[in-house]
Image (spheres, one colour):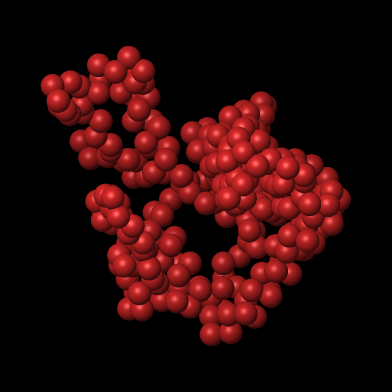
Amino acid sequence: MEPEANTFVISIEPKRFDGTFPAMNPHRLSDPDVAAVYRTIHSRRDIREFVPGPLAPGLLERLLLAAHAAPSVGYMQPWRLIHVTDPDLRTSISAIVEAERQRTATALPTRNEEFLKLKVEGLKNCAEVVVVALMHGREQHIFGRRTMPEMDLASAACAIQNMWLAARAEGIGLGWVSIFEPAALSALLSMPTGARPIAILCIGQVSVFSGTASAGCARLGAAHGTGARCIQKPVAGRCRANAAGLLKLVPGNSVEDS
């Protein structure tokens, strides 16, 4: 039987390795659970269009708990989640996003019209809005970030990804909006000095999880005016053993190993 549209067929058949089978690992989840995890990962989408309507009771709380279960360097948990419930505040956030969208379009003169088509409409009709910020005073946390202070941002991104995957598993869309001026959003939400907003998350019901990650990447590349497109390369082509292998953007609409 052919798979239905928007379904992912993932092979999890155990493969022999040194005379053992992965299924013999007592810590391994069941086959259906493993398949569900991979399906969730590969079917996650950055959602921009939502179906009006509230979330089911308790669902937002589950997503927030998923965020707080994310790993963080030195267990500092540098993220702070701001649930925006005031309609007027949401309108002000939308205005900040729109202002930056116009500025970004101006900065892309050759692709102004294409970029403006990438509307950021999620804030207007999604069920919930959550702003993610890096906490103030995080500089005092040096374990694991003394030489790499950006690990606080990496940790917060893990929290967002947890929410994203949990939302997809729940059949709920989530979109990450990063088109805003951090100082303006910080002032609007009266964040303490040193705190920095990094994401506006739009969460809500969707009619369908459609398209592919590569298709979305192609549209974004066109809007940037780079003519770039993302290529789904085999893992072997993106992983090097014992040597550095970086990806660089090459003129001519391709991504190649350097």
